[in-house]
Image (cartoon, rainbow, N blue to C red; front, top):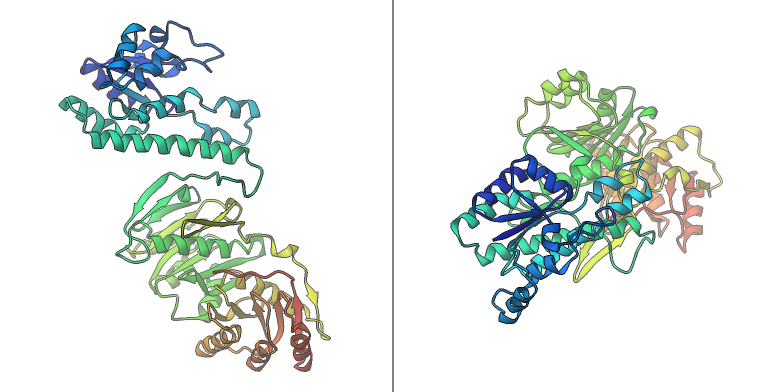
Length: 505
């Protein structure tokens, strides 16, 4: 038997190649892989011994040769194929171990040049992988070092099951597909190209999905943004909630004060800002003292001991912060079922696409992460909002963007007071938000109200006024805007139009 090995990822390659050599499998290799094998005392030969032709163009051409691809693609059960190999002095290659140039790592470098990018586009490697996978009944192909032990054991047993060959071939095709998708995404300037240029590697299987009877997995690089410091693995719902909480808290830069958000089922149930983490918590928690049980807490500031001691009194699923004071970490680790995550970098700028599955395909859109500061702030009522109302309106507008539609948020400049989410009627959301505030013992007198989309009728403004709100922020754009504005004027309210809605489904 013969094997061809050419890899950029050399994890566990030495022992695997030694195992092949112990089975008297003749090894051929290229470039850096050949040198690595020789350093592992593996007697590998150069690919030029097969092709009778040197590597040329700085290694751009080395395996693209009939002596290689004929040896891989020949069907062993086809007499004509085997006769052709004999006529041309070609011996079959039975095992191909290839993974591709590190394109992802290269483009991730800030100082990378265009020439360096181009040189990391593998040509021969994908051709070897695809050829081997195409002929998987006769050729064992491997692209993932984690498959080495299974493959080596099968070879030692003398028979490689067809099911294993097929499984490894599927992984090989997925490997080249993901690689080409990454290259296409890098060179694609068009936001929505004809073919969607994205592929994701599986990060891990999850225990289950939204419900225990649903299987689930995580794909991509979620954990480049978060480091788990304590607790069991995140669930499907945990990951959704973590994302929602972190997106919301990133609306509040740390230089504006400590911001803390409490999330439940991706909806905010309380948001506060303060001079200290504890003060921000107290303001956020006051909005709803029931929903935070089992919720997610996210901060834009390190967790200190005072906050840790307070929030340790209730059960929270996950706490996310840019850091934790050592003593605070010790306190929070006393609850074994609580997860603690360190946020490593902003996630808001990482989204190029939001993807939602639909029958037969996916819906793809840009994320709603345009800076709110860039939106117009047009006063449309006779009364102009006061300085205090403007600050409160800006706070409420940052929060309502992250509440499921229809969304209503009552707040002051420091914290949410009542949140109404996901109702079929906007006026019902307003009533729910007012009821939540009343249930929490919070007064809405002199509060402001934010609506993620337009008020279609005056009743939404009227409900807000009756609850105690004095100013409104909304996108505007209703055919009845004049009626809504007239109602606000009649009630002595100030109202601001932003001309941009923030639906979230």
